[in-house]
Image (cartoon, rainbow, N blue to C red):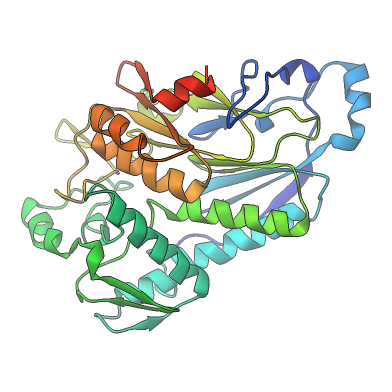
Length: 365
């Protein structure tokens, strides 16, 4: 069971205008170098403050409020301008969604559906909306993304380093089929009684979008949210400059590095990364990672170490980053072309970068 989140709000120091030099326009505009922070993506919001007294005085009214909590098995951070109460609301929402979607909390909507043995289950409207989004993205992925991967994923334990037997995977694999999931209003049914939902490949993106909706409803115009590997920007900074985000080196052991291999600057969009390093273990000389191929039940065999997606919504970015990761570089490049306003960057084990055409056009560096 995921621990109950606690949320802490604090005033952040303003960033120097020297770090906010940008050339504008489009989904991405170039900034200077990004600051280093924890997380799969590295938001400039975590940088140290400015050193210029005149600049600091000029931006007293633009100081952001920041908050942090632990939910969804990751640290969630927010930077919100001119709305002190927003960070507390974001914390409450994170706690709410955590309780609804936690696969291993028997009282959650997802766990109740999985335990129902094929019987219909009444769920929260947000749960129904998320599952329907998962069905839609599973349909689009041609088998590379499937929200019923839970039949297999629950056999693996990437924290304790437990690998299921080949026989167990073979027995579970026929129950991985998103077409066995039906949503009727707020009622969800698994037509296969042995199927299991695992929404980990899309839930954080969906939640990030919901958090942005809540901020917009409050009238908030400027914020940056980070849910592990999912970053979403609301608007730009108060001075009109973009939010600067760094893509972390995916090839550092344990995924603890704050080394940046490239940076992007974003306004009103999402940046999501899926990578091999997030949860891994070694057993008998072989390395296993948590992104499973729904077609095999084993960690995906791919030529990439990470895939970063820039998209209008974080829901799309979450599902697509996983789909492209499973697809690999060449198939992924073709697939991302079919989505408007979506860019992708593929990194291999040597940190060689293969950007999509739109990534190049947007000028990410």
